[in-house]
Length: 188
Length: 371
Image 1: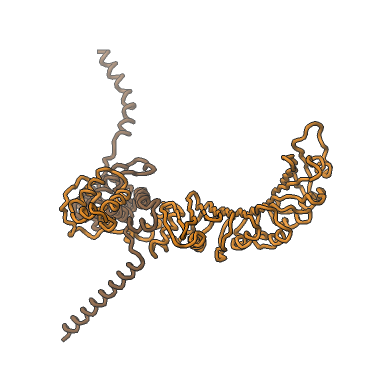
Image 2 (image 1 turned 60 degrees about the vertical axis):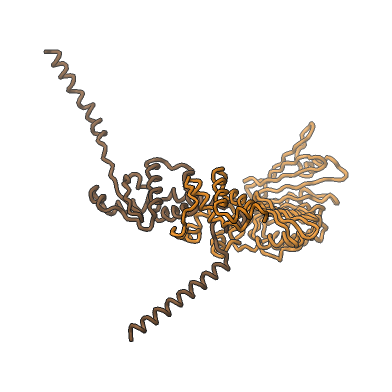
């Protein structure tokens, strides 16, 4: 009997010690948001990972979505290809809550993918990833001659630029003339 | 084109097999493309197409018959907004930025939008060769039987122009860049050189060396006075008196802050250094030097921080004692290596601290103003 009481009495003061634990422990459930690119494939991403993107972070802060609202209204990024958005989401997840390393070697080497990624990251305002991507683009032409730079970055010469501009003007002129003729026909 | 190249080039599968082989080797792509061109022919495939197939194969997609006609038009660097082009080019060094200028007008505008700063430009002229280093990158143009060979960090090319014409063509276009600035320019003339079209040029400091002093004046006058803070005028032989006076008359000298000369000057010449923060020069050995007058002149220089005078006496191989006696400094007993002398500047709280050291056959007098 006495031992039970003792046990009870000894159990009682233990309460305050467990109380702070339970006060620190309740983890706020992580909130998730949803994004999709041109391919309409929806990606579920935590708010922590999305903090890398100043654009999305700003949208989240301003909208004050509940989880249900967020699920029902994924952020649409119609100007970003699905595979590029996947890369961005993967990068944000990998670097969630971590300090970013001085360089990233896992970026796509293929120029077209890299250029798409640069534009997407610039749009989404992911500062660190943009720095890595720009460095990777620059590294393509490091130590190369002007001719090689032109080849690697697919840069037209001034003459090619001028020819393309003339061609575009000519086409625009033809189209405008066609529209005027069509409008005149309609008027009759 | 040799026969094997022609066979490969006319067979699409053979071309792609070569690319697949390169992709499997996992070597840097541009080197792979160069090897491909050597083997198959330089007009066999554009780099952008090679790159497409290379990375497809690299990622294990080895279907040679893939139809690209429905693929979207790939983006190029020219689709990047200008702000991104600035960010990309931040990762290139100054020489690479100057390379961008010749690629096309848009990139030239990007390259020209910010200052091109070189830490060090060194130009060396020999009788049959012109070398120049831009920071750590070396360029060379040397004489050949009919023309010259230009070697840059990225390529080597032959030209039918003379080595001087070809080299100066490069340098003149470089120096004409609107926002170029060089921290230190080092010009060494061991042979004749044409002038650089009097291109005004911004450098913070310069070292000029030549066999013939007169060769140096056009280059000195091309440097923007005021921006040029430090001049090391170092001809092979000490200049004649008229050449020295010509140097003193240049705007570059009058607006400099630090000057180093080889000339042997008398006490009164030192008055011309009144505007300098520091200078180094030789004192004349052709006539006696009044060291008290030297001290008195230097003590009136308001902006001076330090200077160094070299002195030798043809009749006295150990002139330290003479200088110390002239300055009324006590000469310690025993072997002498250094004598220190402190002079309170009249009507001021400042001092001139002299350190007189015996070198080989001459003395160095280092003077520092102490506040």
